[in-house]
Image 1 (cartoon, rainbow, N blue to C red):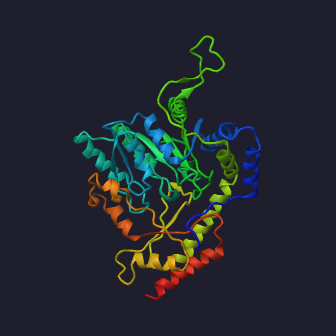
Image 2: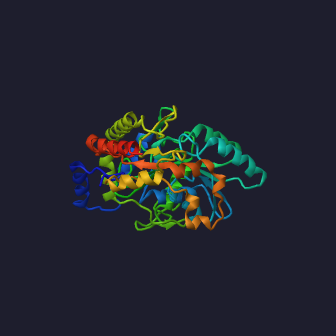
Image 3: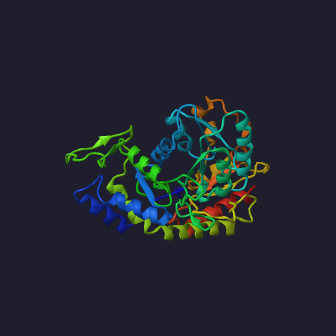
Length: 385
């Protein structure tokens, strides 16, 4: 089976992790702040906060921005459920904005229409989560201006997108957002086995995020004249969302190869595009303001194609040992969210995308020979119809 995604662990990674295992500190030593500093430098921001996973990052991002009961969070339905579960953890309510039919990201046009209607109904969101699907940035400048007009915060969910660019700046610079989060799950661009990171330009948010990831506890005792050496204070309710030094060591090592991984993913994506363009399928579109990190390569089997359906193509690829996937089932279609009464007809672009999309394997160690097998199989499927 050729999987849709796979981590690349090198001897250098193993050496870095072993060094931590042989050290005195396994959890909160030097590696976590080192990883944070490297990510902050890469993203051109002053602040980075490492956490145990990207879902935790989204959760505390919402808390730091004050999301609570009776507030609304809006996001794209084309994402993993973590992008909106974070609001539910805070007691807030969730709604969705339809996707752009070309990029499959949250549509600024649909957002503008929905915000205009929401203002009349007094149901404006407190936070908009802009998900950079498949590694390509949303149209952040347009989203930012809308958010400012209607008084919303912005979180960039860049779980797919470290290494990507928007307007020739790294995703994560937070020029058009309050906080950006990254994921280091094994199938992502780089991995720390499990892990996430928040980056921001805001010093107040930075301090709040640090508290929230570690029980709300601080050892900053400047307010006390002569604190005893053992003293610490819990000053708000927080969580144990910390990253360990073991995970951070792997992340530091992987980050050194980020440029290499970006190039490999780009080369593989171009190979797909070049050899699949003669088939009756829709290939990924790249907005001119973006440089994708190419976390995923999505093709679409048009619903108007009567001879063979998306499900048939998907099934035949799986039968041939090609681990295709579907990213994503619309969040509002999951049973837990269906109970909230969402109407799929409100999201026509998402609904059409859901009936047509297939994710092809894409990861740095995918060989061109394996990729040619995938391409040849697709060609055979379409030529036999």
